[in-house]
Image 1 (cartoon, rainbow, N blue to C red):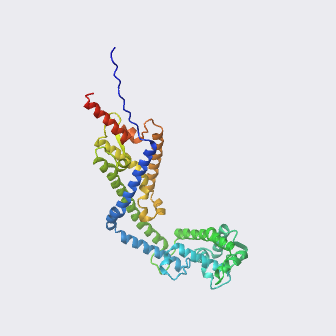
Image 2: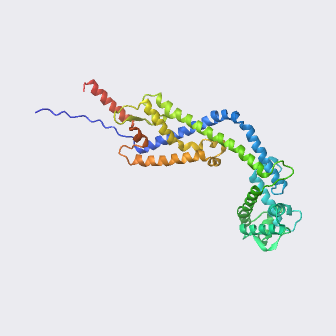
Image 3: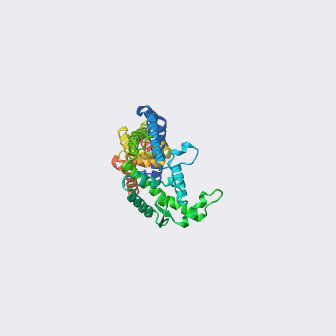
Length: 383
């Protein structure tokens, strides 16, 4: 009988999905860190003189201060602190304005304090039209936003609905030296700010931006200044967006193209650290240089998830959502990442879109090294 030769089988296992996710997160984290570095230290610094950034910022701040000046001159904003720089911080100015506003409403017959009725000053005195009609409209707004706070049966010296006596007694302690409001009064005071004062102030600013406001002390009107600020901010924001894309592209080129091209296994930095290797599924060889370029493009799409975060160190996290040119691509990348994860989890060889479109497979280095050892052994034995 002829002896039947047994064929030796060497199995190569694809990398587990958990490690694949870890590699994906590592890639985008490294890309984000590198993008931060390029953005802050290189790209943005180069762009500053090109767009005359510092002058633009100074112009914008000057126009904003002129807007404040219009509001202060019109008795629509008040500031009590001696630190004059803080008068251009809207949150602090609004806090002081509300303080003075309620000071009048707890002493609503005071001739001295009636100037602090900012909404009467604008909606009745400054707004065009019949004053009695304007007053009625203002009272309607007071009831709309503060039905629990205002008494429709009583009016102040200005003719606006008075604060209910309960709240007058609670808030008066805030204006007596050495006295302090009760916990209930503090809660009601905070509720008044949120529900009444801030909403009314927003209504007032919206009306100013629609109908405009001008004072003799400032050469431009409120709306003209707003348009100038928007034009300047548009240039600055465009620069942030362009710098973000350039920083992102450079980072991707370094991480996903340069690093793979200078090592024969075509691994990225994360794959080197986690000991992953990408091979051609048919030939079992490492991917070629042209294929590395394809992988680079696909990994760049994955990493677009971090695009919207790149300018955050410069502009602050809350402001980054003002750039749809950055966060929309990031949302698209997030959807692609979720689809990728789903596909990877439900395919036999844990293949993502990158492997499917490039006909490759990602393996652990240990498994692949064992395969090549067996291949070399067979070659030496003449098999």
